[in-house]
Image (cartoon, rainbow, N blue to C red; front, side):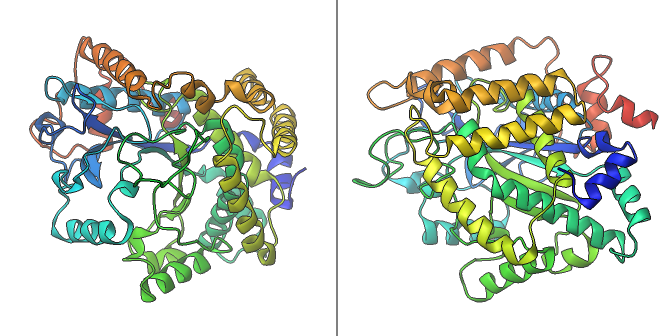
Length: 458
């Protein structure tokens, strides 16, 4: 089951560190009015400066709010950050404004020119205008949940100390391990789409007439109908990843390297060209639809599952370099098929999904991760056996005249009312001060929660 690196980690009783990822979250949601239209209200002043506040910002549209958490040691810590900042955003909204809980946007106006693009400075705004020219307005409007994962330093130290004959630097080791994890997530992205896909339909004016699916599917956003440029990344190595994106820019397939929005992105240096030398610091995983059953768009158990996946990919044998491109190309095709299946149908790849989750269960049991991981795997195994328990299948039970608007608004109002009942709403962004992560933690959790407490004691 274990690779050479995995066996080394296991023999040194350090397996727990492979699931002890530092985690950050980025959750996008559209601001809407009480009539379920994109909001016409200005960016909420109490949310701070949209161009400089690192914790609440916007993306693509002026109405697309993005909540960003600081890195956290545990899934529950990340969720506490997310809940608190999400509540701060909600309490900053204008009267009557709500946060749309679905990945696919609310009905769009027929004349898209009346919806302002995000105010992000001249350079970025010029980029957004060019993006719309190339891809159309609708393609930029879906929202999602992005997870940022960073490997625990103990793993790097242990492996590097024992394998300096194989890796000439910690940067080389870092790039190798992050590429290996990225390949794993891309290889099994179709499983994630099946388990967590939650964008079965699009609302009015998203698709042009006679375009798009004719019936509900598992995930519009994760399919070719969803967000983004179809440009394919190269995940064989970090260097090839960078070379491929730079070549795409050179050939005009990408406006800039920023436009590469693959399902996984290597992060660590704002200058992409330097990334192979300075090393990847974390992965940005972009393969989750918003979960409308949660006020913050994602659930704690989902984060735990992603940490389990990343640990499994570290410990298991990876792909041979010559196989990476072929395997991921096939996985992309599988993801397209799965994303376009009807939510109520047993997946064509049910047996493969079942086998993969069984392998994960064996791994979790072997390293004794604990009951919360076993419970999550059992729940997900139920989704594989019974597609009616998947998020998209549950959502389509709420369809009314082909629309989820009534359901979405009911959820949005409920979440907003809950946020406005907060005893001590956070006001720390009003003066537009750029808070550091430590300052934010102090202001958000005075006496009520101590994120990363055990990390501080190490």
